[in-house]
Each structure stands twice: as C-alpha cells, then as structure tokens.
Image (cartoon, rainbow, N blue to C red; front, side, top):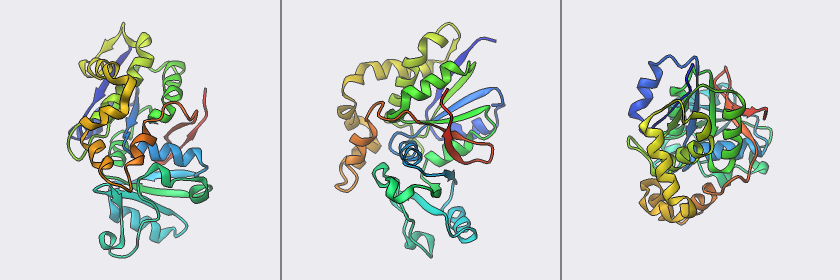
Length: 255
C-alpha cells in the first residue's frame, strides 16, 4: 500500500471525515491556538484524561452526573461562565497557562471549545487519533514514523468556520518532519501547501501571527496575549497524547 498524507483546513471538512472509512488512517488534530496545546499541557501536568465534547450542555450534564469532573472550555475565546450554562462557571478556560499541575494533577476534565473538540469528535473511528502542538511536535512525528502509519490526515481545527493560519503552520511543520517517509507516496496538495508555507515563516512564527485571525484576536487581549507566545514554543515537551477507544484524550506510551 502506498503511503498518503493530506491536510484538512476547515470545519466544513469535519462532516466529510465522519463519512469516510478511517479504519486504516491515523488522524492528527491540530488546534494550535489553543485546544490541543492546552490538552497537551494538561496531560503533561498530570491530568488523568480529557473528554472532548461539542456542546456546553453536554459538558454540564456530565458534570451533574460526576461532580468530581473539572469543566474546561471557551466560547468566543474566553472561559464559559454561568451566564452561558444557566447554572455554573467552568473551572478553566482554554489557556494552556491555566492547566498547571496545581490545578489539574489527578483530575479528569471535560472540555468543549469552539473548534478543537469538534475536530476530535470528527475523527472517531480512525485507526489512531493523535493531538499535536508545537510543544510536542517532534514526539508526534516520531510516532508517525515509528508506527509505520500508511495513511495520515492532519486535521486543522480552524477558526470559527474558516481555516486557521496557525493550524496550517503546525501541520506544515509536522509535514516537514516526516516528509522523507511520505514524499514517494500520495501527497495531497494541501500537505505540500502547508509545508511550503511553514518553511517560509518558520524562523519567526510569532511575527507570522499578525496574519492569523485568531492570533490577532488573542494578541489584542491583555489577559490572553501571552497564550500566543506560549503556544509557539517548540519541543519543550516529549509527551504523546491521543484519543482512546472510550473517546477520552490521554497520555500514550512513547515508542
């Protein structure tokens, strides 16, 4: 079987993923600003698991059934509060800087974000679902190389219903790392576009964020602007994270 690699850019492609046979495919979900970065940090700091759900209502229902669960997530970039749930504030937002060990160690978390958790749910049924951030991208690349993955889809979460520049750059950086193993197979134009774009701006990703809708929005928020710099740190973690058969994001064994 020839290897293949492609990148999906927008939430419009989530539905088509659900309708594809992904049983032989490894999906890697990237929501650089900020869901997959926050999940990676949470698990690195000792969280037991993160259950991604698509709605605030589902998260609140799960909390009602299991009060020990922590709730995390955002709408319009900020932490979900009682005004939106009709009952309770979420414990955490979607800033990776919130997920310190003092808050999350030993905890199980239910998380809902505008795009990232939707992207993960779209990949249910894949052979393997990994989450990626710039913080642990080399570890993700090692997994793809060492596992012998034949078919790989890099799923960009996007911003609202549009593509997200930062996710394309994350996908491009991952493509660049694993390129030798896939270049002789089927390389979708979306993978080539992502890789070439990343190679142009790779030396200064922070400056590139002035061209990213989500990047500009976060940088303009005094409480959240440090999330951008934090999320663009490279290779500071060696943890591998992915979604298990029960639909929870957990730490995986590193090959």
